[in-house]
Image (cartoon, rainbow, N blue to C red; front, side, top):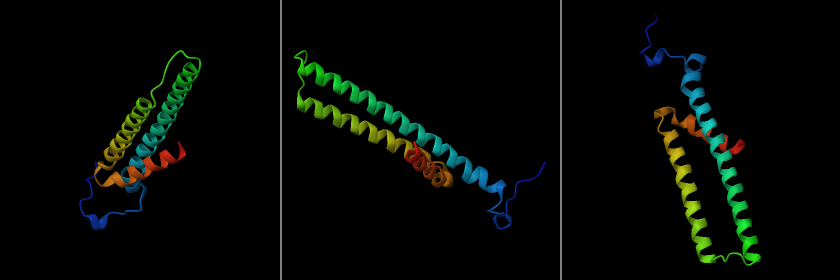
Length: 114
């Protein structure tokens, strides 16, 4: 069994043994979380949009009546919830000690490609 290297000057920062666990793995975790978060957000927007269209149609036919102020408050509450969720994920990934930079970069890349 080999002993871990304790002298930072003797580390090869460009070796695969250093880069994969310290930069590559957190990036992949962030990428997966960002990709998943964007897909969930898209599904939530789709379902919310379908529900709104259904409400508008039922209002048109006189089945329901929508209050514009209540609709605005509901949309604002949903936007606040989405903002809190995104902030939570972003801060959780950045808490991965010094590896957080790579995880956050992966998260942002996952949001971009998701």
